[in-house]
Each structure stands twice: as C-alpha cells, then as structure tokens.
Image 1 (cartoon, rainbow, N blue to C red):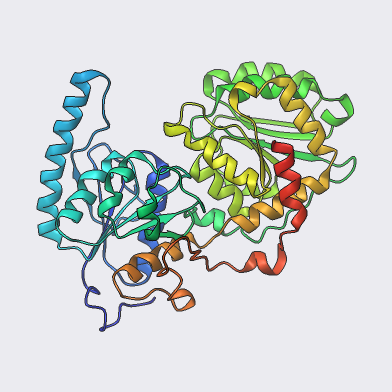
Image 2 (image 1 turned 180 degrees about the vertical axis):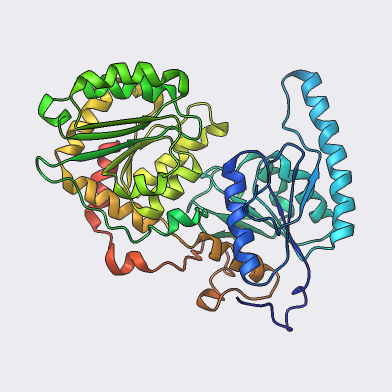
Length: 417
C-alpha cells in the first residue's frame, strides 16, 4: 500500500467524493475511492438522500447525505427543486467546515452540485469527472470554479474554450472484473464457425432490441442463423415475446435473461455486441476491446449517447445506428456485412482496445493528487499537469499485443457513414 508522504501537507486530510443518481456516476466514484484508499488516503462520500452509496462493497467509507434534486417539470417542480438544492448547499457548507477536506471530486449529476459548489465557495480544490462526450448540465454549472476536469473522451462538447486548459484525459473507471479481462485476446469468427452475439440495453434493458433483433435475424440466411449464439438481455415484460420470436429461427444457441450478472465474461467471449452508448458501456467495451453496433438512447440528455457513439465510430471501433434508423432491415444488412468480413470485426476490436484503458482509476487518482501538488503514482507523476488534453493512461498492454492498424479507422468509420 502506498502511503502519503510527510512532504504532502494534505496527506492526513480527507478527500470528498460527491456523487449520486445512476450507477454511471457512482461506479467511477467507487473506483476512485478504492484507489485512494489503497494509497492511504482518507475518503468520504457525499450523496443525496436517495443515493444507495457504495452498498456493502466499501463499508470503510463514511457516507454523508444532503438534500439535492433535479429540476422538476413546470414552475412548481422547479421551485421545489431549487428549495432542495438551496437546503443542500447549506448542509454542504456545514459539512465542508466539519470535514476540512483536501479536495472534492464531483462525478456529475445534480446530487453532486451542492457539495462541489460549497467546496468552491470554501476555496477547497475541486476536480470534476465527466463520463460522457458532452459536458453534463451539473458539471457545466460548476466548471468555472473547478481546477481540473477529468474526461473519458478526447473531445468534450458544451465546454467553453477558456475552460479547456483544465482538461486531463483519464478515462472512465470500470469494475475490477472488467479490467481483469483487458488482456483477453479477440478472435474473429471463423468461416462456418460459431458467431457469438451479445445484446444489452443497459441495466433495465431496451424494448427496441427485443423488437428489432428477432426481426433482423429472421431476415438473415438460414445457414448464417445456424451459426449464431445469441445472448440477449430483455425487459421482464418483453422476455416471452422475444423468446417466441427467436426460438423458431434455428439459432445455434439462444439465451435470454432480464439481467446478466457476468457481463465481463460475456463481453470477453463475444464476437460482436449490440448495445446502447452510455458511458459505462463504452468504457467496458473499449477496456476489453470488442466491436459493437451502437444504438444511442434517443432521449439521453443533450443527446450525449449519440456523441459517445460518434467518437467510437471515428476511432474505427463501432458502427452507430440512430434509433429511428434502427430497423430490422438495417440491422440485418449490417450484421450480414460484418459477419461476412471477419477482418473488419478484428480491426474494430483492435481500435476499441487501443481507445480504451483499464487504468482510469489510477489516472484519476493521480489527477486528484497532482492537483494538490502531492504527486501521482510513480508510473505517471507528471502526466496530469499539462494544459489541454493529456492522456494519463498507464495501460501499455495494447502497445504490446493489440497494435492498432491504420485500416481499422477507415473500416468501421466508413461503414458507419
């Protein structure tokens, strides 16, 4: 375990993590907490009263709950939310005086706003982490007072030019079970061999996948369907209808579940994934290095999933299909083309692996400590200081065994267009 040095004046002060809402905000906070604890730093989580915190996984991390709310619908909803945020700010100011933290790290979402804003008012160094390719609304409210902005994507939309010097590219932390499969090599499907498709729609599933995927597979040639091993996540209410549509198709294997508890294993063994384009999904796909057809959720705030998908397409790692264009025929055509071109899949897998990282938590901890002048890890003590976009990425494995060919970008990007 690395311990803070006596030369670090903040060594014995707590680092506050401000997060709440969905798992997309909590997962990175939990990963950073683990890394900071491993370095001997004290960590506290501040979330809203509805947040589930880290559950039983990090019982040693104290949790403080304050008021927060997303803006509601209509004037009354907005006034109620403003009142909750105002009360939350008062609670967060009191907490800053009580904890006297070395730094506050905000992970987006409205539950983070009172804590980070109170830190900025108290002149406590603040770092924001943005998981998506579009700066979220909460982070846009706070960026002017933050010292650093840690990002997962190389280009961030809705960020003013005057704030870009604060950027450090750390990546988006993934679960240990995902990072453990960073070195799982990709083998493209062989001629006449099995084809493993993985279909996921986020934690709650996606009805459009249950409707379109069976219809698309029905349009494929019978001999191709006979090679397909399909694992698909469905909503509970869609499960039986999807099964009824898929079972007559003569697939080599069919597995339908409402929730996959072994996503890392399934990602590592699939030949192609069909998924949404949320930040956590992108991070896991690229950490392991798997090609994907991405169908961005069309109602995501600021259409950030579409922006996420564009980045992967430009890197040659994925083929986006906007949901309005995600028809059975469009998916069947894309599948037929890709499954007839194993090299395109292999190129996209290499591109995804080259884009991703397994060490985002390490890089993020380095960025926090570098902001404090405490230094980062020995492997990257200077990588987070420069202005503009720098990649504080410790993972070198893709340089050794997954060198990205120049053809990968043109292959997937051309298909996406």
